[in-house]
Image (cartoon, rainbow, N blue to C red; front, side, top):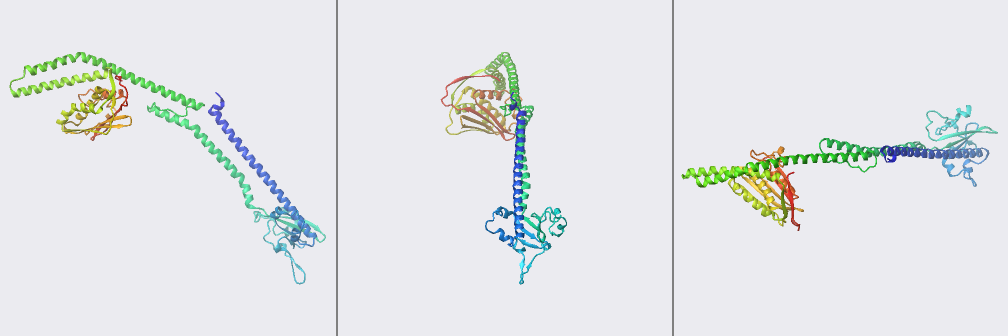
Amino acid sequence: MNFLNTFRGRLLVILALLLVATLSVQFYLNLVTQRENSQMSEEQSRALVAGITIGSNGITSSEYMQDIVNGAGQTFFDEAVRSRIKDVIIINNAWQVHDSLNPALVPSMNDAGIANYQKLGELTDLPPLMEGGRLGEDIANFPNRKTAANENFGDEAHAVPIETSKGRWYVMVLLRNDKGLSAWRAARPLIYTLGVLLVSSLITFWLVWRFSRPIADLSDAARRVADGDLSVRVPNSSRHNELGRLTQNFNEMTAELQKKRDLETQLQHAEKSAVVGRLGSAIAHEIRNPLNYINLTLDHLRSKFSPAESDNRELFAKLTSQLKDEVARINQQITDFLNYSRPTMATIAPTDLRAVLEESLRIVEGQAAENNIKISIVEHENVPQILGDPEFLRSVFNNLFINAVQAMGAKGGHLTVKLAQAAQFVTVEVSDTGPGIKPDNLASIFEPYFSTKETGTGLGLAIVQKIVEAHNGTIDVESNEGAGTAFTVSLPSAHGDASRSVEITAD
C-alpha cells in the first residue's frame, strides 16, 4: 500500500509540514527584525553624525546652531534626522552650555552685553550618557553619567570631545529612543511565535480528534456488540488507511455475526415449527376422531336420552352443553396447532375492512352482553379498502376481540375499535379497559407457546402476528397495568392493486 495512504505516513507528512512552516515563519521574523535593527542603527548613526557636525560648526561659527540648521542649503539635517535628534549641546571648557538647539538653554545677554551661560551641572533632565567611560576623568563633570537609576530612561546622550584653541570642548548629542517602538520590536517575535504555536496546536488538536474519532467509534461499537447489538456499523469505512481497513473489517465481522444469529434464530424456529407440525399431525390423527365421536354421542344422548322431569332435563342439557364446549375448546386448540404449523395460501385482494371487523365482533357480542361490556366502532371519514384476505383477517380480529373480552371478564368495561387512515396504511386500534399486561410479559406476548392463561396454548397472538406480517402490515401493542391494553394493526391500503396469493408459514 502507498505509504502516503497510511495513518503513519500522513501523520509524519503533516508533522513535517508543521515543522517546516514553524521554522520558515521564525526565519522570516528574524530576517525582518534584523533588517529593522540595521535600519534603526543606520538612522541613529546618521543622526549622531549630523548632531556632531552641527555641534562642530557651532563651535567654529559665530552663528547659533539653530540658525545653522534653519539656514538655506542645509541638506544633511533632514526630517528623518530631526525626528531622531532631541537636542545638540555645545559645552565649553568651563563646563558651561555654550549653545543648544533648545532655546531654553541658549545663553542670554545682559544689559552690559555679557553672555550668561547655564552650567552643565545644573541640568537635571538629560538622558543617560552612553559610553561615558571613554571620557576619562571628565565624566565626573557630566550630571547625566549612566547609573542604575537612569539606565532605563529611554532617550540617550552621546558626548564627543573636540580640541579647540580655548581648550577641550564637548558636543553632546541627545537622541530620541521610542520606548514603545522598542518594546514592540522586542515583543513582536514572541507574539508571532505564540501565534505560530497556537496555529500549530489547533492543527494538532484537529489531527488528534480526526485520527482518534474512528478509534472512539470502534470502541463504542465494540461495546454495543458486546451488549448484543449486532446491527451497529462504524462510519468512515471508506478511508484508505489502517483505520479504514480496520473499520471495514469490523463492519464485515458484525454483518456476518448478525447473519449467523439470524440463521440460528430461523433454525430454532424451523425446528420448533417442525416439532409443532409433527405434534399437530399426531393430535389431529389421534384425538380429532375420538372428539368427533364424543361430540356425536353427546348429540345422540341429548336427543334420545333426555330425562322426562323438567329439573333433570335442564341439568342434563347444561352438563351436555358444557361437555360439548370443552370438546370444542380442545378442537380449537388442535386447529391452532395446525394453523401455526402448516403453510396456507392467502388470497390478497381489495377488502372492506369495516365489514371484516363487524363479522368478527358478532362472535363476542353474546359474551360481551352477558358481562356488561360495551362495544363501539369509531371510523374516520374516507377510509379506503385494504389489501388482504378476509378469512385470515377475521382470524386476526377474532383473536384480538376474544382476548379483550376475556381480559375484562365479568367486571365489564369498554371494547373500542378505531378505524383510520395513516399515509399508505389503514390502522385498526383494538383497546379494552381490562387489567392490562405486566411489563415483564409485554415483550413475549407474540412468542409461540407463551400464554398467561391457564388453559391457553400461546399460539393465538403468534398466529395473529404471522398473518399480519404476511399482509405486509405491522402490529403493535401498548398496555398500562391496571388501565387496559391497545393493539394497533396497520395494513396497506388498496390503490388499484391486483389480486395475488401469498403463502403463510410458521417462522
